[in-house]
Image 1 (cartoon, rainbow, N blue to C red):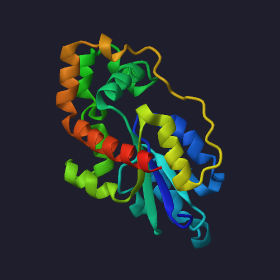
Image 2: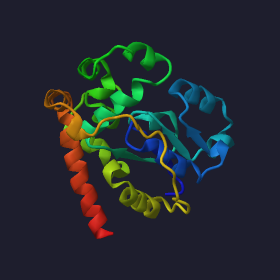
Image 3: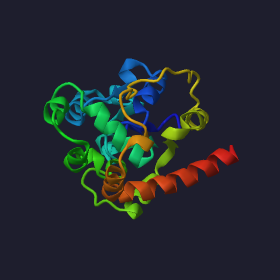
Length: 223
């Protein structure tokens, strides 16, 4: 594992900000690209001397599967997935007041309008796992998941952290929750019409989440 580039695909609103704080503790500043835009990262890496390229050990960010193509070394991935309905609810209430692009565009946007407007709210999780220019399908996602060391479950965050600790030999997994959406309603408070629309727009995410959760529980039981 020590010689592989470890890539954390941070799927928005899955507990990734909290997890990333734990992940990056294991690396010096020159060993990790932490949420650096792809174009900036690619340009920087290509300008490094060969001996400095070898120092890079980790990458994290809102990237898509395939980011490993920028680097010339063996690699592995990990990520977190969340119940797709809970995730979309959290996304809407988090982004609605997020400064800049989202706040400006979502100022007067209803939840129903948001579900159709934001690509992240439409099978966003499987999209990142399949890859930026790949066709979305369970088959493609499962194929790519063969490279992943682990896909954790947000609803089982501590259990996910335990498995990741064992796989990557992390020493310090103490954490404080980051980027929690405090103003969102509970699932039981969201209208049936909204939930049905989320389900319709996230059919692949729902199927993949059930598949991932089943595999995760099996790994947890083995541990």
